[in-house]
Image (cartoon, rainbow, N blue to C red; front, side, top):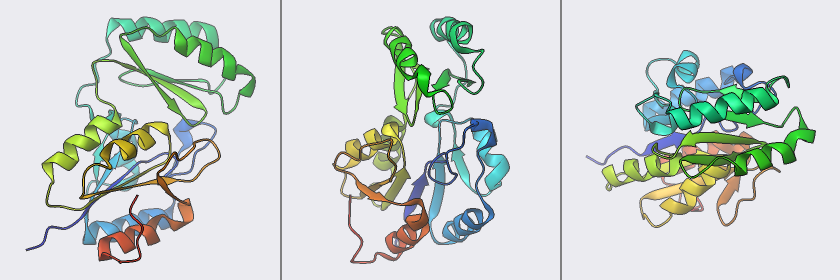
Length: 227
């Protein structure tokens, strides 16, 4: 029997729109219904930097959620804990700028554009033991010892050599994964269009095209353009 395709989706900016306060990000009823329909035709997983519990509460128990970029640990090392405390001291008075996460933290300038340069300078001080991911109007800080999405994606694709795999994301870390995976013939990667991320050779779609593209992928539509 032919294996069902695997569809992997990012959450923020892909399934749910980017919002000013990350805690208010929600998948709407229509996208949730479409997601449930897709799960009957393909294996579905959500790969996100969020804790899995945040997304699980919205999509339900039947959709697999790989939280924290696919890492199974949520232990924060001392180096990033110290950096987080410094970030809170410097930027914590600005509402919505500091987002604390189990493995690290993120700094957002969507609501504070005047802080963009300050946050960029801060990111450069992170040090060798810390990974800095450039998101959409945000910087995310993670220990260098943990996985990022590109590494988790590669692990999944390697485990599924006979299954077609589709990944759709929206930010720079998702783009990194898409470009890295293009060497695998069973992989298709697509980036949701935004003014905040340059696609750099990846195929792009709008959020409104998300589920029509997925349906074409599942059906093996010959007109589907591979990234």
